[in-house]
Length: 332
Figure 1 (cartoon, one colour):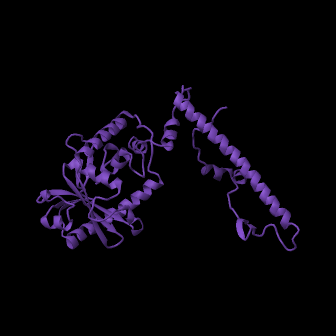
Figure 2 (cartoon, one colour):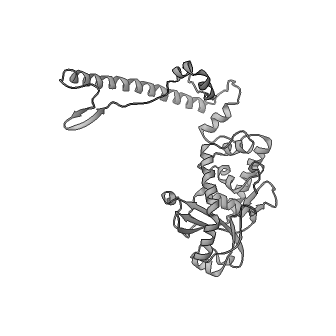
Figure 3 (cartoon, one colour):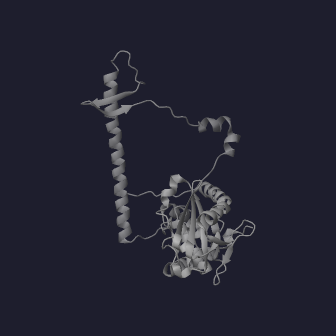
């Protein structure tokens, strides 16, 4: 049973809202919530991985029970997901992959990761699957050294459920099962809740969060009307430095072209008189027995868009896409 993710904040949103996600900025998460954006190819690829993980979830939980002895008390099957709603904010929700009973045996197995004071209580559990190629993102097993995105997710779940500990069962490859854990941090949870409340207010009031990178700025500026803005002395100095940098780059590009001309002219003048040598052959510039550079022919295939528009205008029109952007141009 699925619910509209635009109507609530879940554990999967926590990292983006906190600004620690490698996938989304707070602004990008906001635009998805208010319907200003749709899932892009990266999001769809992540969803594919997520769906595969959900299919493997029951198998990994079985492994936790059979191989490690985790006493699982509740699972989260697709037809009856294990969802919780925050008692204070109904738009704050969490889906817990599994719940487990803390036993003396699992505390001893985890070697200090789970506080003994939790024996006899029910705590949260999460399942993750990962490729051996990226398993380095997880640190030493039986520690809290897990990727920050997942730490944010589990802390969100502890906030909503009111529990103290989240156990991670991580399947690396096909059969390498490892354990990690995250303890409740009330100070961090207080900060997270304030950030999530502020983010949800942005969603409710249709007021976007502040930008955190140039991509965010371009998204926000694309819908703003152009009016002069008086700079502060500090920003005026930044603009001056940027212009100097651009001028230096242009000068270096011109110098690069001049240097390339001198080298290629030298190669041409030395090769043109040699019998049996074609200028299309690979050649090299050497000095003192060391190769300084090579000059090699290569083929590049591109679509002749001008010809396509002339000969197949109807087909070309079907695949045209217009995008709008703002360009920063420095003035003298």
